Amino acid sequence: MQKIFNPLFVAIAAICGILAGSIITERHNERITRTHKKLDNKIDMMLNLVNLQYVDKVDIDSLVEKSLPKILEELDPHTVYVPAKDLQMVNDELEGSFSGIGVQFNIQNDTVMIVSVISGGPSEKLGILPGDRIVKVNDTLFVGETINNEKVMHKLRGPKGTHVTLGIKRHSADSLLTFDITRGDVPVNSVDAHFMMQNHIGYIKVGKFGANTYNEFLYALEGLKEKGANKFIIDLRGNSGGLLDAACYMINEFLHRGDMIVYTEGKAQKRQDIKADGNGLYQNYPITVLIDEWSASASEIFAGAMQDNDRGTIIGRRSFGKGLVQQQITLNDSSAIRLTVARYYTPSGRCIQKPYRDKNKYQQEVFDRYSSGEIYNQDSMKSTSDTVKYYTVGNRVVYGGGGIMPDIFVPYDTTYNSVYYTKLVNSSILYDFAFKYSDEHRQLFNSFESYKKADEYLKREPLFDQVLEFAEAKNIKKNLLQAEHSKSKITQLVRSYILRNIYGENAFYDVFYEDDPVVKEALNMLKKDSK
Image 1: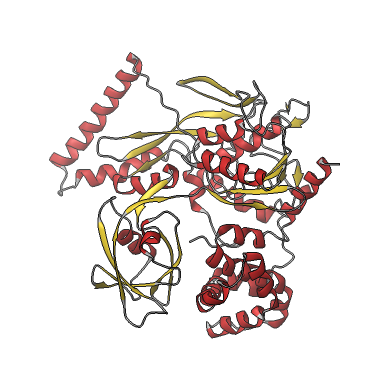
Image 2: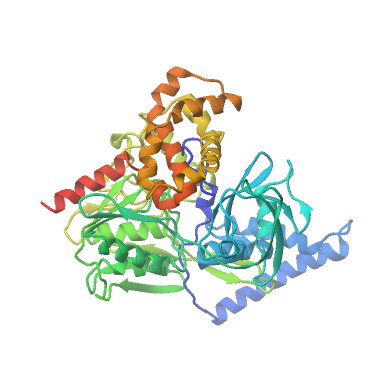
């Protein structure tokens, strides 16, 4: 279940394992063959010597597993080794579905709470409900301090067609309910939300670029158009990337025939130009694209194509700066290497990859933007590590080498920050309170005709005071001065979480971004386009 955290305090480690694209090539010339044989002989000789003559008995397979990641670390931050046991789970996020029971959960008070039931999944078909508690799995008690996310995932996911029996505690039932669930395909949505904002403007939040993203994106565009949208906000903030093909198909919807989308090139990869085919249905619809310091890879391809073609306004903060393309190569034991095989270039010729030779600096670079003040002040923003000027189709100057620079900079909003607020967020108090409140008021929420009506009700409720009491009961001492300073954000986030638990992602993002300065700037820009 997604939570919203303050980026100053939470590391997003996954940013360094992004899969930017999938380019399949084969090179079997004699030089490469000779090199492979030479390496094979040397490595085989070393392993054979260790196996036969080392003083102690050695598990050679384990030694290889530990050595491969260290070898690949010498290349770049995005070339990685994926062990066989992890490969399926790593691929699930991009493949558009996985096999399981189809619920989102949270662990509270040592109990697995079902927060939502995924539409189209096996649990929905059997009548499992949000708010249900999983207390038994296959007739074995499944509660207590030892329960963690990894254990829950291991129990609930599994091969399609296999069975798992859950013992469910439900508020409305006196006795334990038993469900025999056949695991099946569970869709993984990559378009997190889409809804109408104002003045015929539609909003679309894209969380990642996976196998189904293009179809989901088209569905969102078409649905918003039917509701009257003729301008769009495409939100790629926090989107760490994914499949190159998905991004290119989406970009194609907005560009004219022959417009460059992106090109790739590497030592063993000839230049590949990807251009728009002219069949896009939204070539003349005004758009804005929202990015931030966690927008990477395919997100930067999307933003770069819109910017270099002068097709849309890029709003937010400098993006992550990943311009490397990986190819996934599966090995004989079903493990895999995600090998960097090329760089991608935006239409103007920019490679926006930031320097990576110093791995520690590379990992730390985004957080350095906070300490340097770049996130908060445009004057502190490093222009780029690449001083070469590039030009858009409209002859505007852009730069590469360190991420996509937005056309309109919007600083990170700190107006609501306080130490007390940070404690509430980082301890998950707000999330936990929202779940408890949702669970206790589900029948009431069923009486509202829409989430907007429910939100009107929540605005009248004394949520702020209730949160402070709840937090104090969880050993977070009240600080009334700081709490009052952060009051609007605390209540907004709690309302967002409550509405998500009942009505889903559209409700969450609609309320969560109601006062967002980046969204406000996008709305203002699109309103100007209609004048």
